[in-house]
Length: 332
Ligand code: AHM
Ligand code: MG
Image (cartoon, rainbow, N blue to C red; front, side):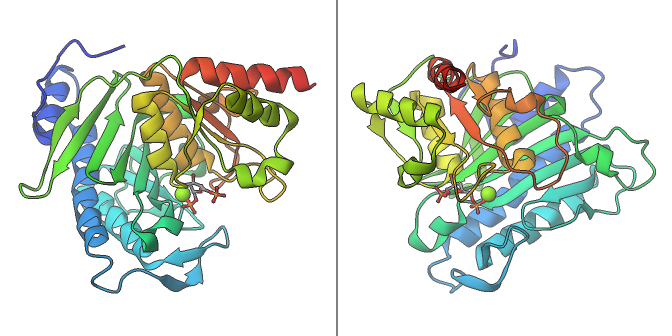
């Protein structure tokens, strides 16, 4: 699954993207440019996040996003920054964003790509200086170039992603992405303004002993999930739940573990969104040797029917995800 072209730790993200592109003689370089656009926007958002406490940009913005949640100022800022970068880059015709009800046409009718993005995930953590993240998926449009992207371009299954990634704004800032040839992680050096390859060829441990789930909703979990959580406790596993999907996912990806956001009474279809949260992480986890399911179906094979569709998410080390599926199956 991993690239044949191994590049040393310390390679800059720009060079890494360029060298990978050179390995594909017919690549036009547009996807590479698009990834660089995202990295640039991530640096800008990182700067805003780092000074959030100082510049009074934290706190509610006074309006709600399409899911009826309070928007934070930084959500809005991140949304603007990413959209601007993608519009200016020219490779993307259409964007789906967690922060916008409808699809966003960039005006780049010659652009080949569609991007689905959660510009700033884990927004309840912004005001309290806890890790947050950006999540993105990239698809090739199915309609002809020369016009705006269509709904059909947007509602593609996760298996059609050409690239996906996330940025974690944590104790250090990292960008982790895949183009379907393994997963690589880059750490940002703010003094140089560059991302450097720090985690080449990330592989997810087969199993782990950490589980991440909001146990406050235990009473309304599906029976199989309740049983799995009890199994974790009996097994002496560690519970770790940051409440930032990217941060919980990232830890579990590196160390082994499972993240679960099941259907609950409050969120009957789960809380997370298929198009710009679940699919991207599913692509990454599978590329790293892990697994992502809604409990009954592989996430990346779900046919999206709505832009902001939600689905339950069970993601992480393969053996752990398999176990949850067994419990869910025995429920019926
Ligand atoms: P958001 O997109 O509004 O930030 O919501 C997504 C976040 C995830 O990052 C996190 O894992 C989850 O919501 C936490 O939700 P809950 O507080 O219900 O456990
Ligand atoms: Mg989100």
